Length: 271
Ligand code: GDP
Ligand code: K
Ligand code: MG
Image (cartoon, rainbow, N blue to C red; front, side):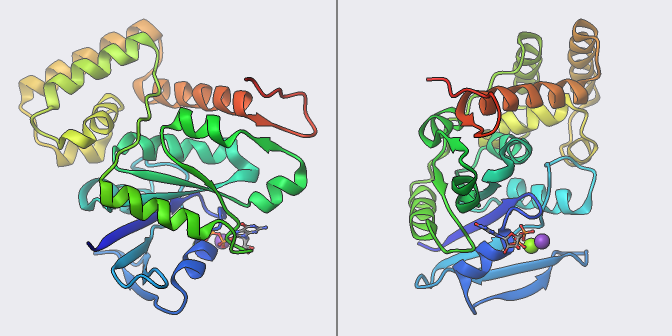
């Protein structure tokens, strides 16, 4: 069975280094449709039926930059079989913002906890097992530069792709937000793919312009969604997009506080 793996991650997380290590000389560079951003594609070494797509480096899946829109359109509409999310382990808190959004999309994800050589040298300790349980997906330690962990990483990715195995990520937003999201999900569930329902519900809640353009809903349904959002905004006294962003940052900082022990700070590793 042919498998398509997408590499997604922040700029400077080691994506290009990883892509080169995985694909060697089998690379082709083209353009994403209609834009001049490079689209790099290659074949996984030793596997002729595994294609690797290098997505542009991004910090989030919001609709504000060309790179973000290319990446999310690809993930949501073209659906790779599995995403390898490259996380710079030495900058984990910042990198996990994109990770949570990628996990919301609803396709299988493996996290490459990259720069692990730097993490180890610094003396920081990351509880991989707990992180993996919390994020509901495998977390594999890698050094793209030294070539460590890559075989385990790609084996895991191919295994998830073939099993079509989605993660079990279940971060909870606050009660009013979860209520709004489930009410929105009820209204849009016939208009979006099942596996992406959570992602679309969040995007409608955020009034994401690109999603509003793309998914056609009746004016009555649109009106109901707006009422749901307004009620939540009133209750939490903030606008919806900023509610999602700030609750996401809180969630990530909890995760990092619990599972990352910095060698030079007072942060503790919970059990
Ligand atoms: P990109 O912006 O995500 O494509 O990142 P690059 O692949 O260009 O990597 C950014 C820098 O980090 C480069 O200098 C790489 O050599 C270096 N790098 C990438 N992966 C690793 C790693 O696992 N360990 C270390 N120490 N450096 C890495
Ligand atoms: K770079
Ligand atoms: Mg790069």
